[in-house]
Length: 133
Image 1 (spheres, rainbow, N blue to C red):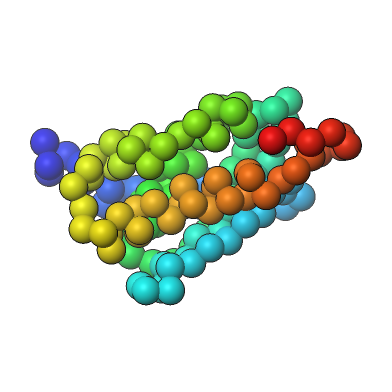
Image 2: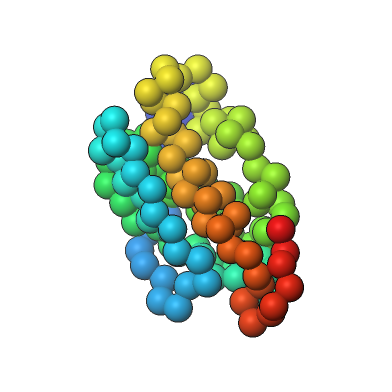
């Protein structure tokens, strides 16, 4: 089973899903891990309280880049509230890597940090004045 997850992660690293830039994104956010140098940037387009499209770009280790690819597939089409409820355990379960060293966990969770920081940083719906958080 461990080999399956290794291949799964390597596939996402070698053939990343949703990688690129998204013009006219409603949310753009970037974070980096100063310890190892991993960097993830995400662009998100919202539509009817859902993630209509998501693109990411970055550089770093296999785990950080594969995690961004996997996370982008997990959240595309989901409601903002569903995405806000995602936990680190949810992402680690998708990665199949519940037992990582603390340094590797930071690599695996960088994309989730970027996504959530971007979502929580948005205080109004596009085109609306009301707060939504």
